[in-house]
Every structure is written in C-alpha cells, then in structure tokens.
Image (tube, rainbow, N blue to C red; front, side, top):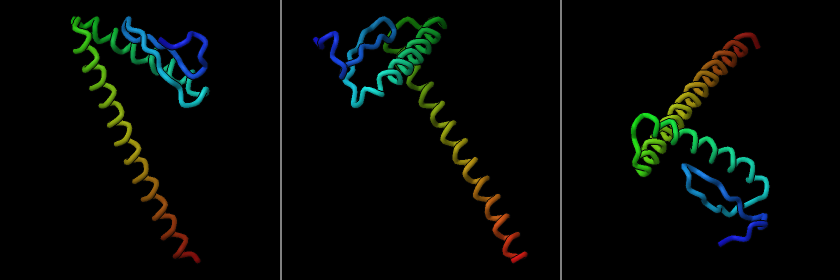
Amino acid sequence: MPKKNNPDIVEIEIYDQRYPLRLNTPAERADIIKVAEEVDLLMREIAQSGTVDSLKVAILAALHLAQERREQKNGDRQLEKAVNSGSQKWIQALDKVI
C-alpha cells in the first residue's frame, strides 16, 4: 500500500474504485485528477442508461472516448488540409506578383 504523503503517488477514484497511480512528474497531479473525474462522470452517465455491469460500463466509456479522439484527429487533419490548401493558394498568388 502506498504511503499517504508520497508526492510521487496520486490516488484517484473512478466509479467507486480507488486507484493509486505513480506520477512521472509532480505537475501531472492536477491533470490526472481532472481526467479521472471526467472518466468517472462519463461512466456514471452510461450507468444511468441502465447498464449496471461495471466492466460493460468501462468498455462503453472506453469506446466513447476512443470515438471522440478519432473525431478530433479527423477534424485536426481536415484543418491541416485546409491550412495547407490556403497556404498553397497564397504562395501561388505571391509568385504571380513577385
């Protein structure tokens, strides 16, 4: 069991389960706590829909988060393509002028 005052350990709670996590840097503490709170909230929202099996709730939460990440990556790629396309148009326009 980790020491309560160990600065390298943060204890989080997700879906009524406590987990001690070792920190790589002390600066991670706030981020890890925030992420754990978001995961806990998502799992509780999923459980309210009628799913009571904690493993199923965790899998559904993981799928939800993976889908969000995928959508964000796709959006980032679309933005990158738009910026590159716009940049190319400006470069061509400048080449005509210069």
